[in-house]
Figure 1 (cartoon, rainbow, N blue to C red):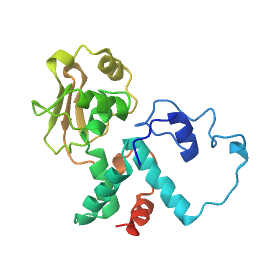
Figure 2 (cartoon, helix red, strand yellow):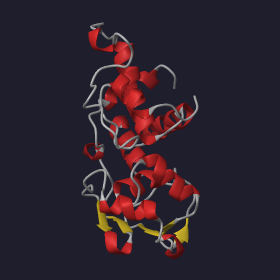
Figure 3 (tube, one colour):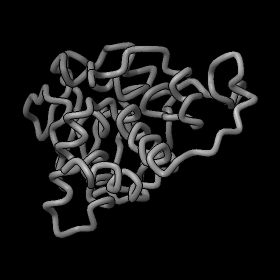
Figure 4 (tube, rainbow, N blue to C red):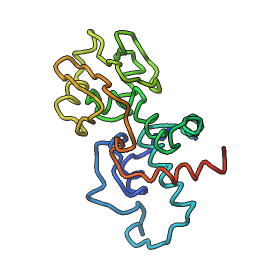
Length: 204
């Protein structure tokens, strides 16, 4: 399954929550599924339906393809840490997410574009891979010649989310420092990650 490129608010309405990494818009005005009968649906969800919904929350918020997410689940299962907690740590540790959570981009797709276009440095070195995993002690900065980008200035002036406590951010220097590893409480939306683990259990 390829990366989602359709209407973002419509997708969030289908999932029933705001995904801050996907869009700065909100479903508050229409908090029901899209479609002519969206507000009238009372269908009971199956166990599989609930598992799929939780999986899609992660996929779409972090902008992953199906194969990418499955690979992360496999990596999480190999860890000594509880699979669900490790999966969320791996997702939050992606460079594009760190650029977003540090306030240098308004959404994860915008952060991915900054990374892809080589505007971001990790420990002074160019890194243009959005899935790059940051580690404790890493310092993420914006390249000198990229500091005039209006999109970065706008994101810093009006951050989408409060800065997480595992990052130290110096807006004036456009610098983000990774103080500790993220944990399952770092995810900025409600998620039942065990259902995601159960979803992939039959496939892996």
